[in-house]
Image (tube, rainbow, N blue to C red):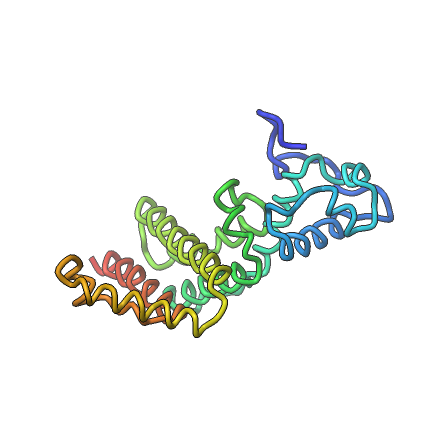
Length: 232
């Protein structure tokens, strides 16, 4: 079952949640996260979810209306793994860095997140609470509304894009030695054709496989830009 055109989002409906004692919405969501972790979005179905819960497929629809509802609930549940800490006395840059690095860790644990984020708004209670804290941190730093929105969108796009590419690469190249050799091959190829790719041959370090360091350096560049806007 798919969401009908014009049907309101799960988060805008008051449908009362679960009713039967054997199953609960919480159990369904927990099993959905486990199924998504093992099978991904492509392998997720209400039939497989019901089998994991040892229940009939139709019994799930007493607690959720559609498959899309379950995906919305599962996504919001894992967004809740990003800690909500009181950071009023913490430097805005340190607070954002900590939260962004936690977001990356959650996306590593649940690689399907990057697929779902691109298909639905993050408007569940856990997601909105974390977005609210993110906005509050940048507002406290002093960014005006338009620049604040741009900064949030840029940081979100950076984290989502970096981790999505990272997860695909990890699923394709699983052996560190194989990855190192691939990087060396690319480097040799570029150097052998330096007349075609002079900037790459001169500037690019293609043997650098430090994803953690690369992520942090890229994040620092964006935060440096925000800091420069604040200083201006």
